[in-house]
Length: 114
Length: 114
Image (cartoon, rainbow over all chains, first blue to last red; front, side, top):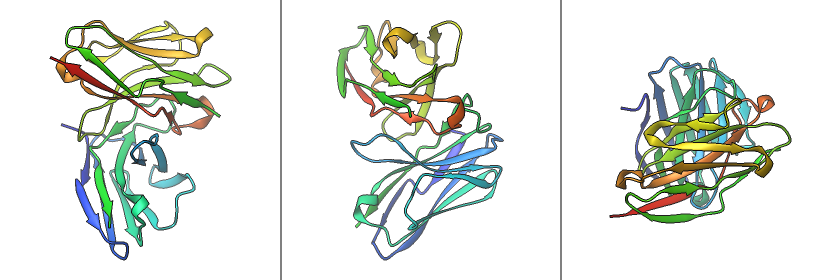
């Protein structure tokens, strides 16, 4: 059983829709992350939150809007996406932001933008 | 900045055979090195990590990796592969001043023949 749960597992949305991805971690960790995994591209870090404060935003388009209401929950709000945004979106958590703190991943949300 | 290459996109081995997956990194100092595994439909799971000390690192599921500074490599090995090892394997590199902004390699897909 993974300590990081993502919902939904699959999402199909049109370019004009607004949807949200949800992530919940049950590990008591203080840092949470959103990654994008596209076909034939390395895993890309999108956002980092530490103790509910966004500490990193790797030049992600504004059509992706993260929210971290508490240390256990992370959302990724989506609006006016493009077909090239279709990918697997992975949430991860770690005990803290030290580089030695391993990442624990959820199973991801497979997003298809039509 | 760090970079990671995994020269083999896809490797096929027979069950019971030995395995070596290659990883080369670029970084000016001693990096933090990781191997993650991603089974189909799942998120990434940490196999092992190297920070310092003994250059041969033991991980879960019978995997090990060896850090070779002279070759800038961190190859993953397993003496006898099981069918359940079929998955995608990612090497990642981190640095003390980069926090959790790991750089992931493109991955190597492992297929196991019965």
